[in-house]
Image 1 (cartoon, rainbow, N blue to C red):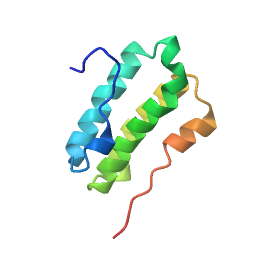
Image 2 (cartoon, rainbow, N blue to C red):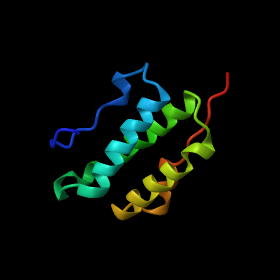
Image 3 (tube, rainbow, N blue to C red):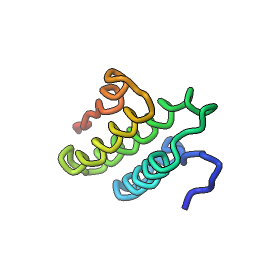
Image 4 (cartoon, rainbow, N blue to C red):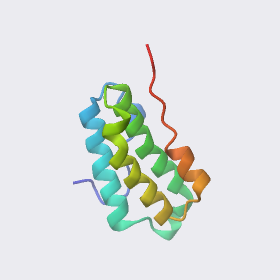
Length: 102
């Protein structure tokens, strides 16, 4: 379980994580965000937190996951973003994930 300080593990510090680890981090942190939300004083950072979740999906995609396999997680991220008050444009930005080729 993550510590209760609200800090998300930073993907940038872990450049060699597997797709499974990226998805595990996504799942744990999305669940935490859904269950506990953000404190009012942290709402200004919601896009940073949500972008971190999106980055984990991107990392998993780059490590071999498919867009289809990530679809349910992407839906969960979108719902969470809307629940936190993001607008459609914000959510589209979060879900704009491109597979890297070669």
